[in-house]
Amino acid sequence: MEKNKEFCCSDCGMQSCYRREKNFPGLCVGEEVSKAEIDSLKKLYQSDPLVSKLSNAAAEIEGTYYGKLTRVEEIIAFARRIGAEKIGIATCIGLIAEAKIFVKILKAHGLKSYCAICKVGSIDKTEVGIPEELKVQKGCFEAICNPVLQAKILAKQKTDLNVIIGLCVGHDSLFIKYSKAPVTTLITKDRVTGHNPAAALYTADFYYKRLLQNQDI
Image: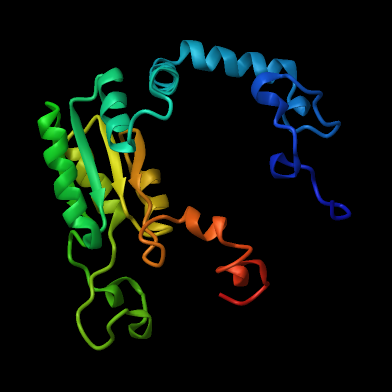
């Protein structure tokens, strides 16, 4: 390990925290958490209505359907267990076709939905201080992605659970920050890998060796 580098979970080769079948490393992050903090967290998971509901629903789906359901099905199962009747969809304009399919699937399972596309509001990028040279297509109207408005629209619709479909890196962060309802992700956008960002990690020692080089991006 690098000198002066703080030990964290990515440095650990044991993951003893899962089943406690091995000894914990001497610098384990979890072991440094005080008993009082752990007790406080236990209380939060048990006594906070929202935290308890979401946590229990997620654990039930994991324990019942591990490796058996697609993520689409898991979202439906999760929605049912937390009592969500109306699903908000915050989609990228580039994945509107996928969003429309998801809407059909939700309807088939008796769930309502409301979709807000990323370009909603249609505000030109230069109107919020983004220079013309940073547009994808320069010299014409090009709307900003508007995750804050997406979140506000879905809040007005009183959605019970919001689902991200392909929002850009950073735009998803803003949507999550401003969303009133709990948020989960169906699709993480990666245009290069066909929306499979893990592919870059799996091939970092071969096709994507450049990822391990310190180059300006």
